Length: 212
Image 1 (cartoon, rainbow, N blue to C red):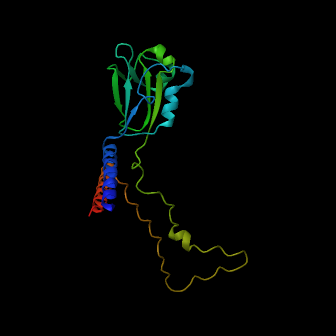
Image 2 (image 1 turned 60 degrees about the vertical axis):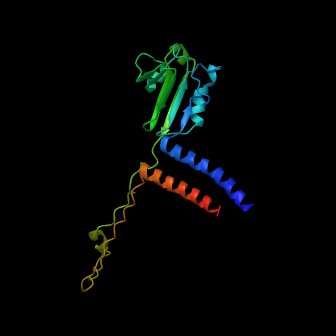
Image 3 (image 1 turned 135 degrees about the vertical axis):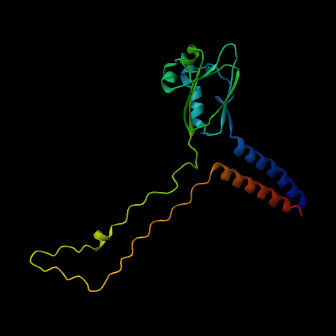
């Protein structure tokens, strides 16, 4: 009975680990608007594509798919001003194959509009914000400078009418404040992938051990 339960657990866990590895290696594939159909929204006033993009979470390495009739429409990658004004005259990139797959290779905003200006004016357009790489941050945090020796050892001035106290005899050893240790640099994407790989393999091996 226990052996059968272990086998079922292994059969459930193995596909999940495989999907996790595939996602880490290739990113996630989004379909524009959800279904992937690139066309004028049924209700242009609702901003269907914008609402969908706000609910989604895009990262570097992810892709987005646009499906549309190649002879009637296209996808234009444009700058912010052309996105706002539905200017189709000077796109950064143009796609008209009917099944466009675009990969996000850096963080920041991406603006897509229909190659048909009237379609764009009816909200066949979408602005997507791609999140920055989680491992791309400064390797060490800044720390406030330690006070200088002269500031630390300078005696306070004596009040008016009183003599300044004599300095203590003998040498005084001053230990400078040790500099904070530098934080370890963040893991690269490759290191994160290898870590996820070994974690998934460990989970599979652990589940297999339940069979014996």
